[in-house]
Length: 204
Image (cartoon, rainbow, N blue to C red; front, side):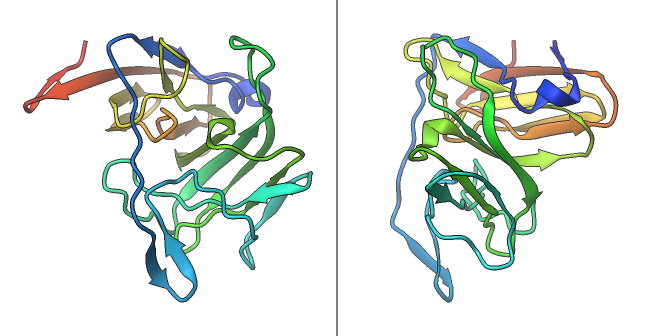
């Protein structure tokens, strides 16, 4: 069971579930021109180092990025979509709890672009959570699947969540995250990661 946490800590607590039999993967494709000077790629975690006019800015530091939100399954651009963007300070130890240094919640523009987020260190994909956001409220959870071998996220793995008004299936993104599910009141959210082969899925 996954329980929603209080407002103060919900954004920073990541559910890390290990699966020894799963290996994550990520692919890169050629850049695609979509409109004017807007260029799309296959990754939601590609740092774009200039702000987008009219979109919000948060955080402090000499480094900054905006990102483009893509659907984890189709790689299609998620324009005009609620999102949550977090930057985490690099972990000092492997098992150290990581809390967000800066957080930005908003709605992507028509090209799927986020606001601009700054940090006092270079921003790498493993220091970012950039996910689609469902619902509203101060309580939230974005389950993450990590590999037992190295602690990195497992991409493209099926998941489902139920409870708190949700019944949702999807795929983990490049960093192993599901979407972020919010609620107005404290409640419990059931979730699981599972594999599918030859059209058959093991959900337990």
